[in-house]
Image 1 (cartoon, helix red, strand yellow):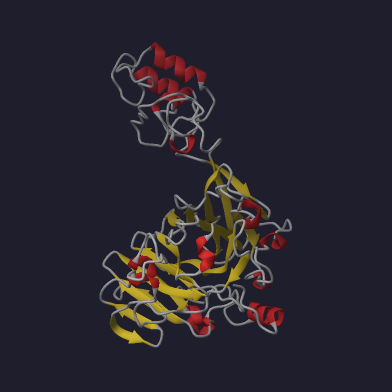
Image 2 (tube, rainbow, N blue to C red):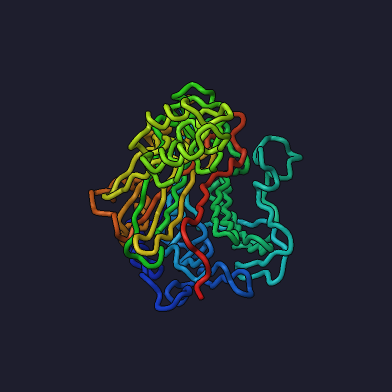
Length: 463
């Protein structure tokens, strides 16, 4: 469903240079919505705001010709700058054999949904009850052939963005149409700094949706933690994700000792490393003579942290474990992934990467992006969606003319932006792919997808 215009490339090029491109730091510790046309300030809660940002409804979103759903600019948490821009510029769908080919979809076509509140008009509704989209109406199937299914048609009479201001979280909701598809988007902001973007894939009845197809979406996270400079991205890696290396019945990414069998997962100091592989008794990151002295001081006692083998007593068995780890770090543990600095632009499938950490090198504040439980997989059924997806992530140096790939074909072409530029200590962008498989015959469940972004470091309010 690629939306064609007579001047596709020209419009795309214009949009990349239009207001709303990367604007750099604002002069004060709050958003400057004057920099972004058709944007509105959101401050939540109203008293002593925790979150502040500028937002723009899908109908006004850029880059064109396809838009990017809800756009957020100048995102601040507790007075600290976090992002320059958040949006989803690329949404596409690929059909399997016998299907309808592939489409690059648009996300600036708002469609009505249910939103009741006050004020409610001109593209904004502050709701008094949760907004209801097609995915809320029928979370498992929105386009079956049952004529009595009320979710086969659009519901409600509001177009735009609904804001649900709860005591502990804020939800921004919208619904869009692209042909027969109904896309829903939510951004949820929590008091503790967590952000949860969520995308729902629905539809109204159409013959194309009867065949197996895969939806892909690409979020663009333009990190500006404490300003655009001095940011870096780490891949957080656990070796052999999905496997059980030590045979204790726990997959590596959930195992606090991936190379030592410990089905009880005993971790008495709660540092993410199981006792069976944690002779670092003083938690300084390495097993050495200080740890030996600590064990000596509690020898033949029931000290829980030094009881590495879990037999109830600190003895020669525990000393042997400590000796085997001398001058080594604790672990490895799937709960404490290895950090791998992305020093130059790169893109790939997630592989052993379980999360990404964007961090300011000066302040130490950062955000960890954790994939949603269903975001990572590209399952092979009647066709393999991986080649079309192109990848799961792209870490890129920020450039104003790389807001999207211009939408000139079905598949994303973000690889064109990855050319080896330095990313360590720079202004960086992380693109993140999410998606869902719709099997033929069970093709229209919304399959909500999206990652979690969790703050790392000291984000206490500025004095």
